Image 1: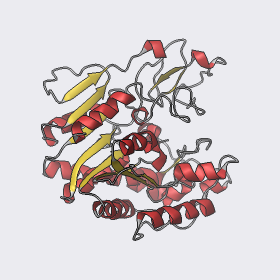
Image 2: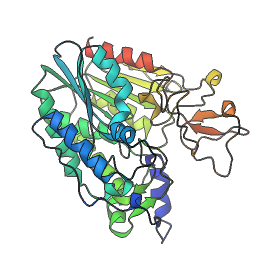
Image 3: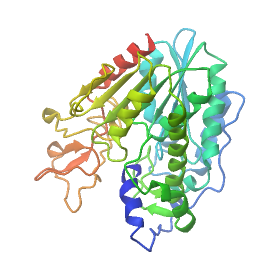
Image 4: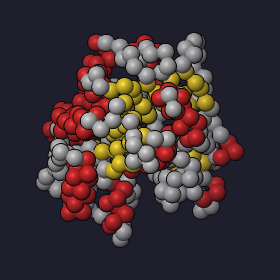
Length: 383
């Protein structure tokens, strides 16, 4: 969904009609948002799970599984945790996106929490309900709750969530460092600034089949507007001052949503701590002289991988849903009129929209370097 944002916004400057949703509960909002300001994280989880159960437009028959994969959660280590991290997901995704990372970090002694941004977890139309302040308030409140329990506090975010936690860290001295995965600082769309205006005239930018239990496939224009607000806020922070605490940042050279070069430049000029690290998946950038940047090839033909996507960095190869042998494959990947092969062993994997003759590319949804990424996290956090 989010991966087509640039294309959709560009097309809308040429079109005079909008996407019309089918008559389905998935495209009709719940009418309300859950609270996120409970006094305890446990109560927040219980209340949010109940709200999802009451308001979700379920995709499959296993309702409890869908609730679990969209609800906020925490992982506690076996011993008393002195360090904690709060994870924030991206536009259209879910707290579950951090499940592989949270399990590993909890084993390393971290108290790990992953929250649900208002408007998520139920149906795409619920992205029409929140304002940017709802997202900021949710991040701020749960940063406070976690800060009250640990001596060392980190924030982590994917895509839009990376924008939100970075903005929080700029104004919150309690934050000791950041883990940012495909942070959405810079869109590759020159029309992103139109998103707030478009949202007043068109409800939907994209309508798709909703067959993914952890990610919205369709995009209301309000969602694009909320992403723009997060970009605007974080870019103001980056323009005003440098961030001088440790940061781990990852980016794919072939990210189809963001501007990878602008993100790398921001890391080099605005994130100044000597222990910070940037992991670049792709060809080594030219004229690179920053020893804090590591480049890893994203062309892995022995695994039928042509390049890395916006989202794959977060998932281990053995993830049961998005992993190499997972139960869900993102076949819709900007391949035009091409039909996927009958033999799954003939599929290749890439970022959205990558095309090569005589190959069908599904979305890459797992990270072949996932264990290396965990080592990067341990290095930068001092584990």
